[in-house]
Length: 563
Image 1 (tube, rainbow, N blue to C red):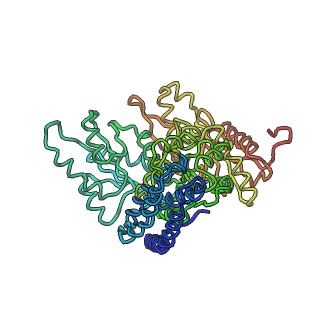
Image 2: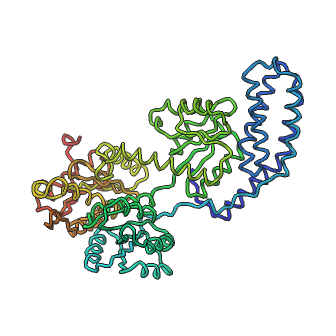
Image 3: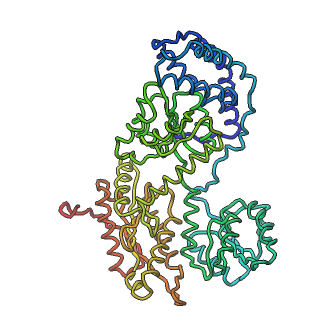
């Protein structure tokens, strides 16, 4: 169901067409509303007629502002509230004069058609900057200590980054005329309290022009220094002497966000034109979006599209938003799926009641395109963070034991269906107990984190990585044959051995061993069985002297040994 991101020109053209179509349909819609309102007799028998009028006014109140008819949206909202109030009581008690007044106001809605706001500029429909998994990450380092810069450059390059060093920010500013970094790491010396901070203020336009995440290094750990860095838009602040694995961990988190797959949003709304508008806006912002107009298909659509957020109208014919949210929540696997009501309902009590029935938030129509994009991004990002806390290891950010095993089984099943190979790598840090015994568990955690960061740097976005337990890791490599996996793991082994760790002034290094098993050798094996074979290959590497990669022997497990 995913769609390619349309160009800005295509979005502007399609939005303009939707706006024109909406405007062309308005006279007929207003004529229909006028006929409905004129036919009221003021009796309880008119309840179905008034209910239809209320629903159509509700739709206009929500859609008018989006398509530029702000005055129409405001007028219909007032009439919608009036009809809603009447529906809550007995229609026999409504005076004839009130009915006539309502009919007259509905008939006068056409006067608002000449009050049209200019269309929103497509410039607000900008997608996030992103990186592909195979791009080399360009790091610019601004550091006037050449020796420290060279040491940091070597360490960062061991994690797969390309580093360009500048002595001063002005040199980087000049280089930015022809090139842009993916990230800037800068040593910054702030003036003392009370001194002139002009130089710091002058950094803002320079750093903003680079248009990349900013990480700062400093020897200052006071609040004022940190506040100044925050004003400069820092994504991270690191004290000297540098904890390089911690720095790289933050870099990896930032890059993971830039490389994250598009956010998937399902729009459930009976207003076809409005849903089409929202979908276009989200597509233009780099997301994947689908619109659903038939509520009965909600479960099949959620299962197929796998949205990370559902935008749902509150009032729809036959099925309300809370009813559909309740249907979704009945399925355990979607119990935590974020649901946000997007409705023209302005009654606060109604909003609160609706949110208490299966939803997470409430947005009011009409909503600007920029606000819609910002709201969706923030909520999906938060949902992803919460999901990561549940399924991922807190130290490394990798999948936990149960999650990586589940992901392996799914990958093996899919690969067998499509006739593609999968290779499983089981990795283990050599002599890790001695690291903990000699340098302490804090240093051991740094070593473990470094393996995780190196794996994420060197492997593809399609590869799946987990912390299997302790100092053991599992990497699932879809569409990767054994020979390619061997070369890849050899490269990771060499890079890890080149990382310099330090503890209380003592430098040390570590190595790792790995075992590989591929479905090319064991085409009928499950994921759990492949793990057993990879684990045997790992221990063969350990017995063979460590700091090496071993591929499983081509002899399958005996039936009695299979898990």
